[in-house]
Image (tube, rainbow, N blue to C red; front, top):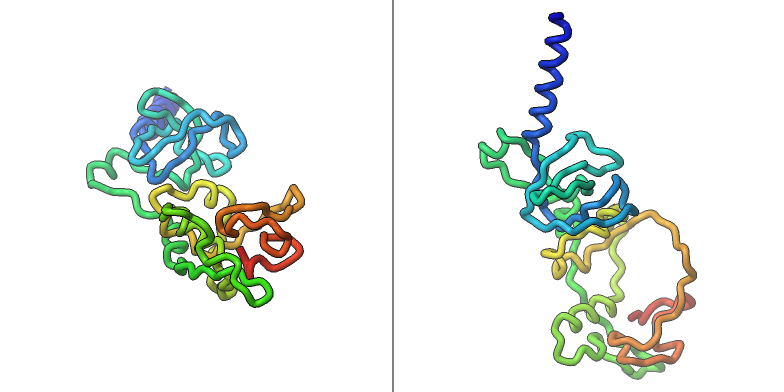
Length: 216
């Protein structure tokens, strides 16, 4: 009888511990139906949403949670900060993910290069962005030709790259990354686009057969 009571007490303690644990969304994360990045997306959760952990143990890198409006699903663990009631009482706040810190440290501002053919400049380093400053910055990044040192690359996985936070959309481009993966489609030459001033000849667009732009 005593053993049974002890077991019940342990179970109740475990349940209360799980209920007490919460997670704070620290960057946009997709709530999914299963513990997989390929499962059905239920909704996108944004900081600083608070989640309740159904189980504190991660599965395949995902946590089983309940949202504030009662929706249940799985979120990528790296995109949330787990805490419990004691942490909340101490005023603990989420810290920036180590991967983001590394990417910010590795960032190098882009210096766009013009497209030069037969010694003549046929498209400037910013392409044809019009009056759109964001497109101008994007084109400048596309038209850079600098090569990072081998030691400069930050190793990331696909989930890290996919889930980069929107609040770093302007300062993360320009950080060199390396990722392992497989190409499932043959790379095709680009067509007319703003970075290449709308040009379409084979030597005016990006092509798998040549080094881009002196590279666009």
